[in-house]
Length: 440
Image (cartoon, rainbow, N blue to C red; front, side):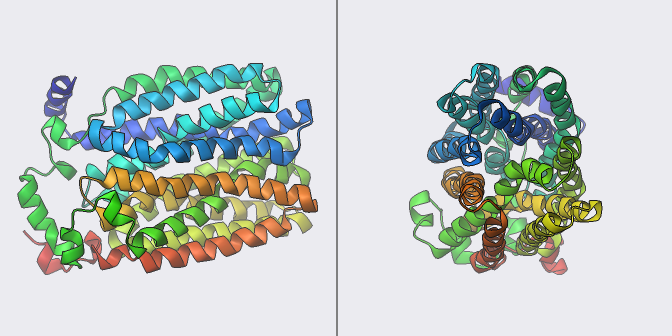
């Protein structure tokens, strides 16, 4: 397979890394939508079975927690064997969970299928998995490449969420699970076979440079600020003994609380404040639409101004989004809905375009996958805690207000945490390196 891919790479008129970005784009479009669709499935599930909101949302959270336990193992597998086997395992898990979901009759069935199988499978082929290997293909255009790949999630939402909602309204939620399960299986699995372990496996260097890796490293060395830190071979054991590691953990955990709490509860919330199910489903898709230009533009901008600024913009986007949700409870106007959608999508979703870059620029090296895989525990735990926390607070108080205020505070602390971790103090992004030093 490696020899075949090397042959393919030599015949392409462009760098093979951009094909990897294209494959990641399609994988994200389908994989993320398969998980996001839980927000569409939750209302009919609650209506049919009469389960509490916290119990139903807990399935989404439980799936995240299980995948969090597996994340360090996934990182080590990507370091040693490459991403292909991880993505194919994710395809098997997600497709089986979706195809078995129509037989759900009790809470544990829900937790096993739409929770563990779909959530765990999505983790192995979406944001966290791609953040572990895409940075290895790009250095100068790292933010742009990652953001372009992750924009696939927005396109997938535009195309697939309305389709799934239409199936739910016409044929029921079970039919939508089957349709999505088949799509995951027949599209993503063949594409995953085209993903090698690294650029070296297809005879290329990061960014498509023709220079040797040693010469490229010397050229890019001008972006290093802390030479002693950058020269260290960062193993997981060394990384966890640094404060930078734990500030990243805190920032990622709190940001993902905000991300997934609104993603899971948004549809139900908007219906309850007065919008129709169709408009609520449209809003979920519109967030993803707004995310497409936001991720690409802000991801590329992070290559120019630094990862911390874009991370801060993303956290601010969620603050604005949650504030708009509070206001919608008192005045369910379309203008406030547009503000919520734009802030959440254009700004908030840009967080994903710098997550991998933040970790790579601090702990770059042969053990990056293991380090990011361990940090993924924080990402997934935050994603798991957010929906559960919001659901439990609603069940206890009859309102989302307390949860929203708590999550706004989480966003602000998340922004501060990454400034303290300070990737800019280890490696300067290409756009901020001195021009004289960047010249060959």
